[in-house]
Length: 337
Ligand code: NAP
Image 1 (tube, rainbow, N blue to C red):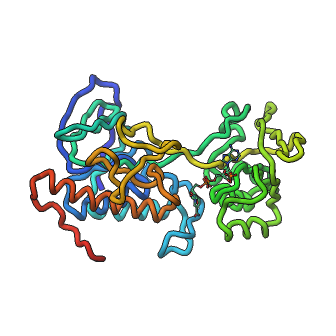
Image 2 (image 1 turned 45 degrees about the vertical axis):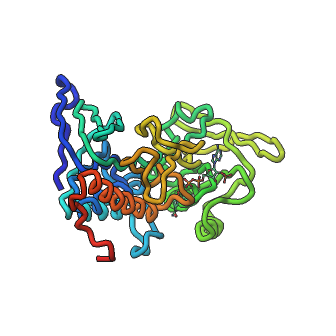
Image 3 (image 1 turned 90 degrees about the vertical axis):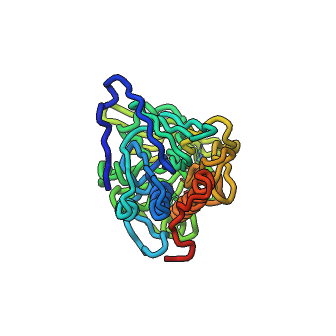
C-alpha cells in the first residue's frame, strides 16, 4: 500500500494542491480501515489520512478476545491485519495531519497541515476517541513519570512493583489483568460498589490474587518524590476517610472522550460530544459520515467500528453515484462475497 510521507515537512511555503476524490477517510482505526476496504471494493477513488500509525486504540491493546473469528489476538496484530487487508485493494494512505474538514455545496474539502486541500464528494470521519483524564493534581505533572494511560506501553517499567488502576469499565479491568502479569500488586480503585466491566472480565479480576479492588473509592491526588510517583491519595466516598496509598505507578482508565475537533460546525452532536448519525452513519450534513468511537451509539466495540466503516462506505458509494449523476461506481457485491 502506498504511504505518502509529508514531502515538505510542513516547513516550506504552503502549496495549495487541489485534487478530487470520491471519498476521504479521516482516521486509520478499525472503522476507517474497514471504510477504506469497502470503498476500494466499490471502485471509489479513496484516500485514508492518518497522522499516526494505522490501527487506532486497538493497536495498543494487549489482547482482543471478542472480535469474531479470533479467540485471542493482540491488538497490534489485529490492526495490522485490518491495514494489510485494506492494502490488498491498494487503498492510498497518507500519513498526514488533517487540520480541517469544510463542507461545501459542490464538494467537501479536507485540509492537511501542509496546506494541501483535498476536494472530495464524501468524507468519512473515523477519528475515534482519547483517554479521559481524571483531572486531579499530579496527573499531568507526573504523566510519563509514573502516570500512564496505556498498560501495554508502560507496564514493562513496573515489573515487581505496586501500581494502582483507576476505573471500573472493560478497559480498566482488562489493563489491571494485564498489569497483574507484570507487577507485584495491582490495586483497582473504583468509585462505586459494582464494576461496569463485562461479567467475564469481572470474574477474572476477582480470581486474580494480585488484584485488590478498593470499592467506593476515588483518587484525589498523585504524589511523587525525586524518583517519580510514590503515592496516590484516596478517599472512601462513603466514610469520607482519606489516606495515602504507596504506589509506583498510576494507570488511569476512566473512559474515552470523542476526538471531535475536526467535526465541522453544523453537524449535530450529543451532549457528550459524540456525532449523531442516521442508520447509514451519515451526519446531519450530506456526504459526511461518522464511524466508530466518534459516533453516538449503544456500545463501543471493535466489531461495531468495523461495521460502521462498512455501512458508511456502502452509503458513501451510493451518495457518490447519485452526485455523479447516476454513473455506476458501486462495483461491490451487496451479498456476502
Ligand atoms: P467506560 O465503559 O466508559 O468506563 C469508564 C469507567 O471509569 C467507569 O467504571 C466509570 O465509573 C469510571 N469513571 C469515569 N469517570 C470517572 C471519574 N471521574 N472518576 C472515577 N471513575 C470514573 O470506558 P472504558 O472502560 O474505557 O470502555 C469504553 C468502551 O469500550 C466501552 O463501551 C467498553 O465496553 C468498550 N471496551 C470493550 C472492551 C472489550 O470488549 N474487551 C475492552 C475495552 C473497552 P462508573 O462505572 O461509576 O460510571
